[in-house]
Length: 457
Image 1 (cartoon, rainbow, N blue to C red):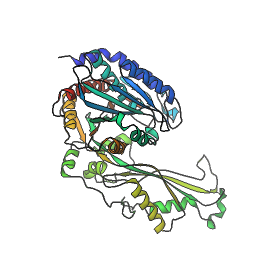
Image 2: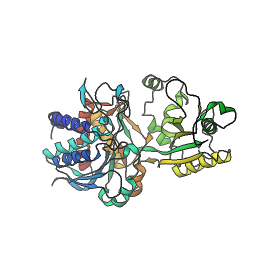
Image 3: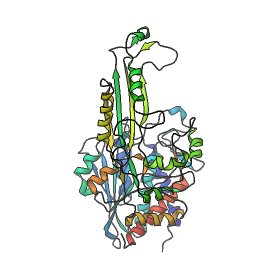
Image 4: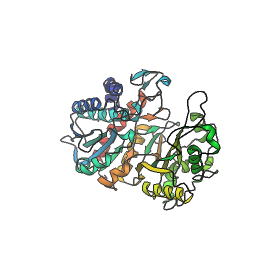
């Protein structure tokens, strides 16, 4: 029996070098920077691990990379794992808040700092390095496929078209999702689903130009009007008041509630981590279940008028707000968008425009699927039985439902990765701990081997 821990340790200099090269390449989808250069790097990585690839660029948007690695002669060709990753990253701004260059991939105190190193470049390198080690030591126990897209950070607008057109390429028995983290208790989180999302932009126009504020007693103010409309959508006790918003929600089963107890939602710790200045809007005793199972409505940003330094007395010509609703099973983005529109019209705000920018359905895997049990069993071996937090779903969103729609709703999807609770994704000083990176490679090797040999799957 091979000593995978030693083999991973021997591979670490090569693995770190690959992660540095990948993370030093900007790939910012929101700004269109470095996309094609990143695709070329990924093609090299796949070839070096003895995989075959195709660049799918026939559906619009940034290219999607398909890769496949065949099992060895002793492997099982009837078992296939699909990995979903993305190569695009968030913009690095504000640059002045970075301790180290955002695309420097510098290592300090056991951490690598770079935009995208946690979300999601580290996880892709983990998976490719695990494959590389297996290829050097007898080959793969099963078939492995990859979908690597380049638009996740802008809402995956073309992903459904790619999945629909190329569904046969991506058919698999199970999918490992892009990312997860170790929480503050140093438990690895294994996530079995996501919330949905209805992301909207509301706009109100009052005039063709900004006007001197002396007219504030005569002319309506679009900023005030938008604020008044928003105030009708959530009560002072934080209940969403859009009519029908909570209709059709499928409540969590007792089994799901029991699973959720493994997730150590630390209300006091959250206050310290984020420097919260206000009390939680959920009771601390119920905060974990609210986080996992309740829908939300969040004002993500408001823009209107003058926001520079000093004073400028204007009555703004327009105002807009970004509104983010996270959805739970039973809710759909189109239905929620329609209910928000009806709510505004019913209260006399028919002049306020409302557009849905992104919509995703919620998704949750069958927690009793054999592959889920195999993934958990393997995690217990690598991380320790008491060092796993099983989440029925993540509180954030992602295009899992699109995978279910085009590849089969019965297929389990599990998110597990190499990040940690203070990795600061989407913020300055994003990082991963290299010890977690190494441990994740070990886990991935053991999962391949266990899955290839497990007759229950």
